Length: 370
DNA sequence: CAGTCGTGGCT
DNA sequence: TAGCCAAGACT
Image (cartoon, rainbow, N blue to C red; front, side, top):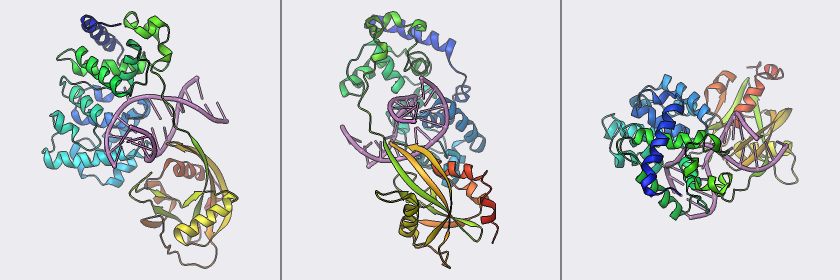
């Protein structure tokens, strides 16, 4: 068990380890507040490698806060496409506008002002204040929680209130004044690289201080919480082609994939075939009478707590029918060319279908007559 | 405060 | 294959 008189030793070991082992990351070059902010938002619930790829592309298009504030949301969404949790990018946009209008375009340095920005909670506010501005504040993420669950052998779920209070209190006591930038990153990087899901205790500079290591149960910490049930669902969607163009519609501004363009479709109900479902869904959502021209493929993908099997069809209008839909599940619609389809933002499952279609030779004849 | 909000990779 | 993530915020 680490005692308060050992805190300084432990934090020194962490700082030394970090200096020798930190990964070279784009936002670690200059610690520009804007870079730190975008990186922290992108890395929420996201793996490092993907985050870096999106970060690099983002910065090529949007080099500073004002370019974000002035950008159209559709453009930001397109840069975020495939990364998930899209409220993050909407909040990034809102926050950039707040910085432009209320902070003169300069990223605020005051903790309360940072914390007040849309999309920034306790963790991210602490991360920006410490990493960008080197202020003596803590930031506790899942990595830090895991490290402390092991160091102090916390035998109840770490998220419990008393555990979080203990961790925050202890991190605060360990934080070496004037070195929060390095210390907070050291703690998180240590959790990510060494004290990871499968801990590398034989390489760990803190193993002699670690209660779970002494007990031989580091892999049993943190105590797992009950996981949400993953539901398998079957859906059907269709690629409705008319006069060489494809029908898409815009999702509502709330809920999953808010404001995204998509192909109509929905769940395959009990006692219903996917073919029946796609026809029914088009009728319910657009009042288009469609007929199935051909089956394209089956796409498997997942989101939040669902595993989706998506049956995909080529569709045409069932009879001579106006290409004007009656919208029941969308806020707008478009008939687009394949090139235009590449430019709109689609949910990853539909994007997967589009990628499949690029190689589908049956597509060309359908798109010819216009 | 428990539910919602994505995704591709890893084992 | 199917589960399980990976630097949370918001309601």
